[in-house]
Image (cartoon, rainbow, N blue to C red; front, side):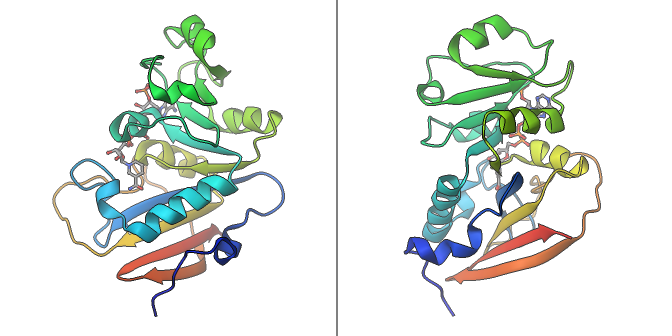
Length: 212
Ligand SMILES: NC(=O)c1ccc[n+]([C@@H]2O[C@H](COP(=O)([O-])OP(=O)(O)OC[C@H]3O[C@@H](n4cnc5c(N)ncnc54)[C@H](OP(=O)(O)O)[C@@H]3O)[C@@H](O)[C@H]2O)c1
């Protein structure tokens, strides 16, 4: 049965629980590809776009890798964006910095002083971002309800470190084959999940899994 997702109270099951919570929202083809022609947008439908926006509204902060920000051309959002980057290779005049953008980086990042002049900066780790520390520093700012929008490299690390509480996964009705990236990149992991809810809109499925 097709389920319309027009009304806000229809998203009740997506409300965050009390306390710190890390949710990820990703989309994949039926055969597990995380991008079509290099972008995730080619996989979604209108209901997926509505859910994407509703999940942002429910979150305190969106956590996203710099690779996704560059590939998808992220601009400012109503919700604060926490962008994870080692290189800090950003154009500070871009729309990304017109809203509240927090750069999550390392103590050895090049251009740290310049970044601080243009954005809020969280330093977590020396060579690589220590995600546990980064999440703790977001919490110190009152940003408890975290929505990770990927990409696969960042999400793979969060799962490997046992930090992911919930995954919202849209399954897009297409087979893509080839060598497309998956929703998780990086080291092999094994995290058991419990299915928390299922929705359908046309041929798209909206799955929500929680950590066991
Ligand atoms: N299917 C989906 O739901 C979905 C969702 C999101 C994205 N995507 C797709 O995924 C692709 C991009 O994903 P991706 O995996 O290549 O990139 P990503 O995870 O978005 O970002 C990788 C970048 O994040 C920074 N980074 C990651 N881990 C770090 C750490 N521990 N310490 C410091 N910096 C760190 C680095 O940025 P610097 O290079 O700045 O150092 C790194 O190059 C795009 O094609 C996008 O369309 C798909």
